[in-house]
Length: 130
Image 1 (cartoon, rainbow, N blue to C red):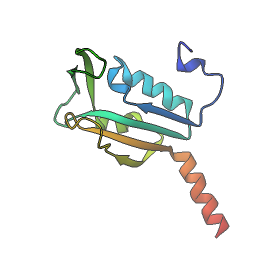
Image 2: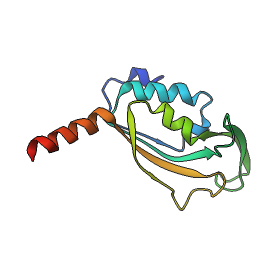
Image 3: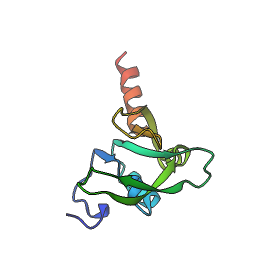
């Protein structure tokens, strides 16, 4: 395992974050570091979202009755969708979705982000070939 994403020995083309950002105490810094790596695609799936009227996002206590074989609770930070979109500087949200197996409360969504320069290159290539 690596101690930091900054220690990656290769340039990733795709990064997948599935249900993890809400459990990181400094998710903003992690996401900014990922954006600086500049992968072509970033997939954020199963993201717990705060209601937009919750100005700063909030921490909830998640209760799991049987998933781990014994009841337990742990903190989960809800993230504002608007905050997430701002943090994805240089990326365009191409798709968003809801998984039917995620909890209904709080709202969960998935997002596919593509690097804007990748999209601009694809458009240029299409125009040149037509």
